[in-house]
View 1 (cartoon, rainbow, N blue to C red):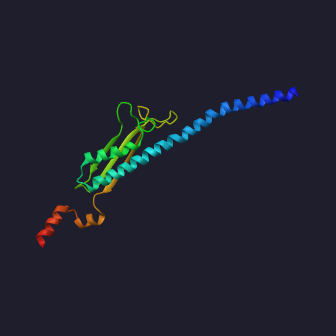
View 2 (cartoon, one colour):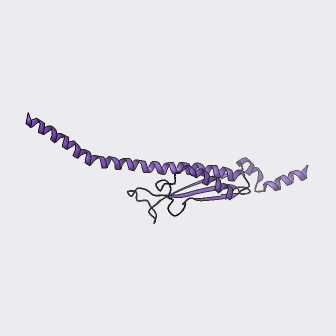
View 3 (cartoon, one colour):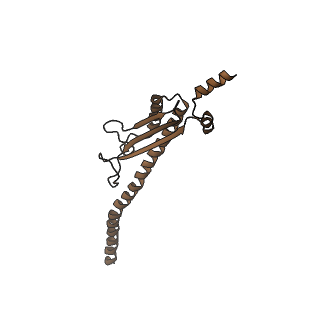
Length: 164
């Protein structure tokens, strides 16, 4: 009887050792799954903000400052944690708004840096992963662009007024 009790303790000790070996591996696997999810979340928010900023730029008079402010406000959905968005020596958001108004195309590019787990090797000189998203939208519908044949909208309107 005494011998069976010793075996029971040995089995419990074995379970503890197995758990001590397995738990760090399980936690590492969970972290490896979480990091790409964080980067994907960042990219989705950035793509949405860039697309909406592009739409704003394409339908306005091409005011890049208003577009940039709007995009930065939308990027507020991303927490200011280094895993989501590096915030050490100031904000690493780079927002570039180009075109709109009289231009044929509006383009918004959003770029940031993310501090990844040390296991990922795709990092820059500061040890951060660079995430960049670009959205492009035409400022006029294709049928309107084709009907202009390279002429400006104001020029076409002026011709129409003088003909009638």
